[in-house]
Every structure is written in structure tokens, then in C-alpha cells.
Length: 531
Image (cartoon, rainbow, N blue to C red; front, side):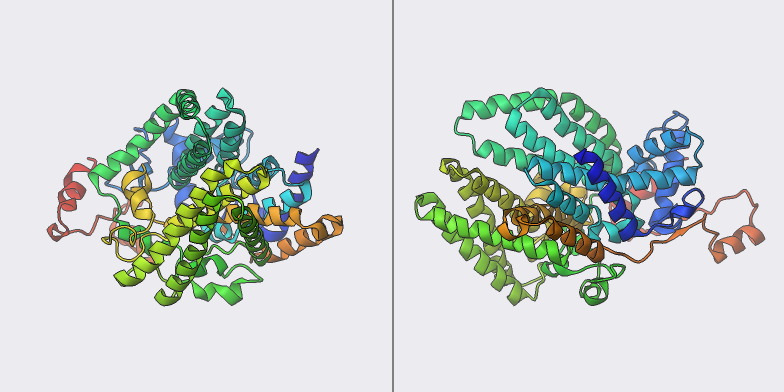
């Protein structure tokens, strides 16, 4: 019954906030059919026609000619194509099936966040509010033109699976973790890497609280054996990406840092957001809009403040908590001053500023980890859960900032991301690093819901829950998203085809490279071309 109620409320929020043209669902493409939206509509059609039939080699979708394995140049979008194909089998047009699969992704984003919040013992009303906040997150709304990024629901599901495994240690809960990572990868390679990183950090923090090493070893063995099949499938699906990387190159760490988040990203909404967009969209020049909304942000900060205040009380009776608390407060001071000195910028700042800022962020992370390690001696479960979430928040917030200073600076000036870039599989292929800020927003939503539920004033009346839900609908209202039919040819392309070529010919864009581009040149020009 709770599931049905959450589904209906989220469907209402979906219709109010996104205002998609459902009347035209059968013959228009949501998001448009040019640029990135058009690319993924094309990939979906190619997967349906060829990738699942064996007509062409795996991941060979024919785009980006003359390069091979072009399905691994970006997110593969295989699972959404599977769903689209399944819907077309009921007689629905391709456009209608493609749009319905996107609608499914929107609602699944909200429901997955709802399940996570309920697993964390959040009441129904506040869980629905949190689910709405994740489903309509400005980060996802801004990327409406990137359909693959709408399939974010495997990240909350992975989070939930990890929590259930740490609680029950069952074979099925262990398998669910690997399944979420693989399925996330089949929607978006970005989300596959992020889900794997999230699972790794959550499980590591869970093991950190174990008192017996033998228990950790036995649990890790069970986790590995339960996910052998998932690991094998992940290797199969990721193999084309390894091929592309070996034939071309991995993006340098500076590319990811250029597209990293900044502190101001978390208070900036995209221009399509009707309430906050006109006020905050000009603060950011790239795609890193990560504002979770004023209500969520304010209550999440309040929840973090209450946690730190409780930490202060606990520190009076526990030595390790006392010292870690002091280092955490120093980390807050250093981080705030570091961002003030650097003007809110993390990259290409002087080494002295990078050291100052890096030391503050590392202090936040390490002190919270130490506090979590010794919190097992504390009998208050809610406090331990709060520290657990705080470590996750600091970790992914730190990561979202990219390289601190120059990419060549050493620890601690380099930040956390360079370590992940070099040592965590897949992170060296990430370009749009700010997208990991979606996990930060998810954790902020959890903190906000904990603060909602912990407030005696807010618990007294269901009317307050309804008012908060209504305000979230206002906060997450967006200008109507584009939807159009198949795009016509660019004028210059149409001229070429009409005057100089046979109508059945194709226009081929060759890579504009010279031998001055270094060792990539021969690989581009020879090894990676198809005859």
C-alpha cells in the first residue's frame, strides 16, 4: 500500500515538475532529436536493429565512422534499448516506446530513493518528499538532453543493497550489489563506475566497524563468490571500453578537473528551473548544477549541525572521538578559509593555497573515518549511522572537486580524485566529474529527511509534510522540455547531398589530425579504422 501511494505521489510530482507533452508521446522524441538526445535515440534504434541480432559485431553501431567499437565511445545505453525493444513488441511506435522508457526511468529514480529512505527507517511522508527531491533533482533535469543520465536509479538501489548486505550478510543481498553495478553500467558507463565506487566505500566503512578481522575476511569471501558472475558480465560489457582506451587514449586528469564541481555548484540551479534558475544559473559556466533545493539544503545542513553537536557531547566521554572531533573542526576552518582564499576554485591555484585547501578536506575525511571506527563503542545507533553518512558525504564531495591545484601537485595538494584516477578502475575514463555530485545530493537528501523526522515540531502534523511536499513541487518546477520530430538535415549537408552526391550517399566526417598530435595520430589514422 505504501508503494502504491508513493508511486501515485511521485507520478503527480513528475507531471507537475517536468510538464512533458504526454499528448505527443507517440510521435515526438522527448528532449529533441538533435545533438546528444538525437544520438541516444539513434543508438537505441541501432541496438534494436543490429546489436541484439548478431548482424554487426558487438558494440559496433556504425556511428563515428571510421572508428570501430563506437558504441563504447560514450555511454552504451544498452539496457534502455532492451526496454524500448520490449515495449515495441506490444505494437507501440519506436518514438512512443523510447519516451515510455524515459518515463519509466524518471519514476524509477524516485521509487529507488523512496526504498533507500524507507530502509533507513524514514517515515512514509518524509520518504516521499526525499524521493521527489531525488527524482526532480536539478542535476538530472539539466541533463534531460542526456537520456542515459536519467537512468540513475541503480545508484540508490546499490546503496540499499549494500546496507542490506551489511545488516543481513546473505548471499542474495551480496548478489544484488553486483547486479546493480552491472545494470547501471548497461545504462551509463559513468553510473556503473560511480555505483561501483559507492559500493566499495560503503562496504569498506562497514568492514571498518568490525571488531574481528576473521569476520571481515569471511564476509569479503562471501561477497566475492556471490558476485563472480556479475564480475564476469561486467568484464564482457566493459571490454570494448578497454579496446577504445588502448587504441585512443584516456582523458588526462586535467579534463576531468575542468568539468569538476565547485562549492558554488551546490547552490546553483539550471536556467530551466523556474524558481531558482533566474537567480543562480549565471553563477556556473559549465554543466555542474548541483543545487538540491533550498528546503533540502537547509535541512540537511541542520541535520549535519545536530550530528556534530551530538559528536561534541560524545567526545566528552571518549578520547578517540574527542581528538577526531577537534581535527574535524580544524578541517572545517581550513576548508572554508581555503575556498575563500582561492575564490571558490580548486584547480590551477598556487601550491600554497592547494596545500591549505587540501589539508582541510583531508582532515575532514580522515577525522570522520576515525570517529566512525571508534563509534562502535557508542551505544546510540542513530549517532553511528549519522557518522557513516557524514563520511560518505565528505568522500564524494571531496571527489567531486577533482584535482586540487595542479594535476601534478603531490599529496595532499592533489586531493582525493587523483588517487581514484590512478587506482580505482574506470575513474581514469571519467570526463564529466561533476556528475558524481548526484551522490552528494542523494546523501544531502538523506540528512534532510533525518532532520525532518527528528524534529518534534515537524512530527506533530501531517499538514506540515503536505506543505513541504507542495513547496518541493514549486522548487522543482521546470520550463517545458523540448520534444520534436526527426530533425531535418543541416542546410549545408542538404546542399551537398542535393548538388554533389547521390541521394543514397552518406557524408563522412574525417578526424582533423596531423602528425603533430603525437602517438595518437597513427592509431587514429590506421589501427582503429574499419575498411
